[in-house]
Length: 324
Length: 188
Image (cartoon, chains in turn brown, orange):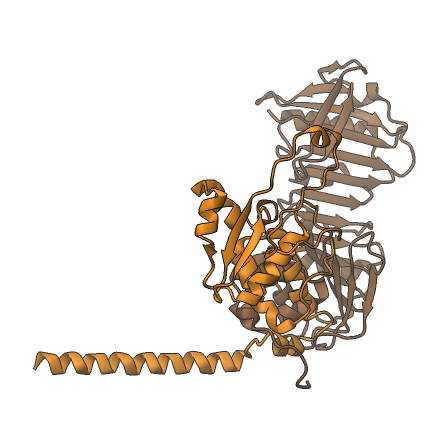
C-alpha cells in the first residue's frame, strides 16, 4: 500500500458513529470489515443487520447462503476448502443487483469457520435451513454434521437418492421442520419425533399419519381414501394427534372422496358457506388462512373444535384445529 | 443551491416565500445567533440554519435566549476547531429550510478533516450531516480487502492488539508495585 492512501482513525470514533458508518456499507464491505479485527467482528454483530436466515445447501458443492435484503453466497468444494467463491447480491431494484465477485476475502477459513463467523456476526443462534439436493460432495456426512450445532429445518429434495435421504435423516435432526420432497420408504422412525412441522411427499398410510406428533402436517400423496380420513378423524376425536393444529393433504389427482363418506358416523355440524373464519398460522402470525364454511367436529375430552373441508377442486383435504 | 449566505455576513436577507399564505403574512425579521470554536472567531448563524443542530436548537429553546443575549454571549464550542466549525456553519446555511438531498456534493473533500468534522457534527447532533459524513467514511473502504480496511482505518492486527494489551498490563503491574513500595516507605 502506498503512502498516499488516506488513513482514518476509525476506532477512535464514538461507537454509535462507527455503527452508523458501517450501516452505510454494502454487504461485501461489511463482511470484509468483520474480518479485519476481532473487535470489528463484534461491531458488526452489534449492528443487528436483521437478515432472514442462514441456509446451507449441499449438492456437488457446499454453499452457505446469507438470506436477507442483500444476499451473500459462499461456495465451497468441500469441508476443507479455504478459498470459497463469493457472490454478493444487492437488494431488488439496485441496478447492479448481481454482483459476482472473483475476489474472495481469504482469511484461511474453511467451511466450519466461515459458518461460525457468519452465524456470529449476523446474530443467528442456529442455521435456518439445511438443504440436501442430489448426491452430496461430502463422503462422511458425520464430519459435516460436526461442523455446526442446531438447525431449524431439514429439507431433502427429490434429487436425493433414497440411501442418501435415509442417511441424512439418521444423522440430521432438525429443531422444527422436516421437509421431504420425495417418497422415501421406511422412514417412520424419523417422522415420529416431536417436530413442529412435517411436509412430505409420500404414499401416505393411516398408521404413518397417526404417529406424527407434529403441529403442522402437510402431505402430498397419490391417494388417501375417504375411509382412512374418516378413521383418522374418529381417532383424533378420541385423542390421537393432540398437538395437531393444521393438516393439509394434497392429492396428486383430484380425490373422489365425498364429504358424506368422510364424516360417516361422526357427529358434526355443517357451517354455512357464507361464514368466513380466519385461521392464524402460529408459525407465521402474518399468514392467515380463510376458511369458508366447512364442517365442524369436536374432540371428546377437551372439546377442541376442528373444521374440515375438501377444497381446491377436490385436490386438498384441510383440517384446522381452532385454538381453545 | 440557491442561497449561499455566509454566517459572518451582517445583513439578514428576507426569507424566500414559496407558499401563498406565507406571502400574505407579514415578514418577520430573521433572528441570528452566534457561535465560536477553539479559535474564538465568532460566526453569525440564522436561527433557521441552526435548526439542523439538535444540540443548539435545544439550547436556544431551553435557555430562552434572545438575539441580544446571544450576541453578548456566543455559544462556545471549545472542543471544535475554527475551520471545522466554519464548515459546519456553511453546511447549515446552505441547507437552511430545505429538505436535504440524498447525496450531498458540498461536503468537504479533505479526508484529513473528516475525522474532526464527524466528531463535531456528532457533538452538535446534526443528523443529516452526520449521515453524509458516515457515508464518506464508509466510502473510504469501498471495494477494499480486510487488510486494506485495516490499513486505511488504522485498525491494529489482533497480534498488535494483544501486544499492546500485554504492555498495558505490564505497565499497570509496575505502577501498582511502585505504589505498594511507596506506601510501605510511608508506613516506615
